[in-house]
Structure formats: C-alpha cells, structure tokens
Image 1 (cartoon, helix red, strand yellow):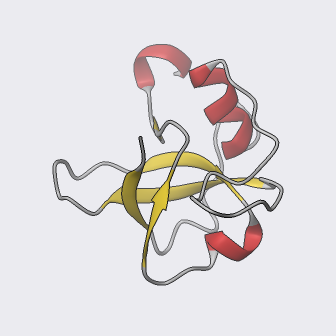
Image 2: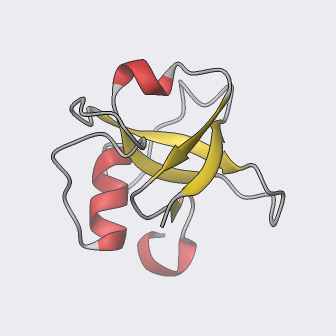
Length: 94
C-alpha cells in the first residue's frame, strides 16, 4: 500500500537530536532498513530520511521516510511505499 505525500519545505537544516540522522531515526523507529528509495517506482539509494507530509490532510504532522536525493527535491505530490514514521516521537526517543 502506498501513501500520497509531498516534501515538507524548510526542513533541510533540521537535525534529529538523538539519532544523528533522520534516516537512522526512521530505522530506529520502524525497526526496518531499506536498500532503495521509498518513492514508488524509484530505485535510487535512500541516502536520507526525507520530511514529508500526507496530502490527504488527515493530520498536520511531519513524517520521515527513506528517500534518495533526487526524490527529496520533488516539488509535487508522489507516492511512498515504505512506512511513514513521525519526525518527532517523543515517547520513544526524547
């Protein structure tokens, strides 16, 4: 199952305060590791944990998903196939 998202703008300078990287934050939170980008149809390497928001407007949260640099610069909507993990899960990491 995929989720329709768009990249959250303005998150480039944000750092995960406990995990060291947003990709590691996603891996620690989900217990998964992925070898390819989470964008549907992309086979690039996930070099970072990209900040995305759900397009359906079901909430106003920022999520992390493994993503390649090219997909991280997309300006429109796209589908991700991996789990979304909250960018800030205070109950687990803080």
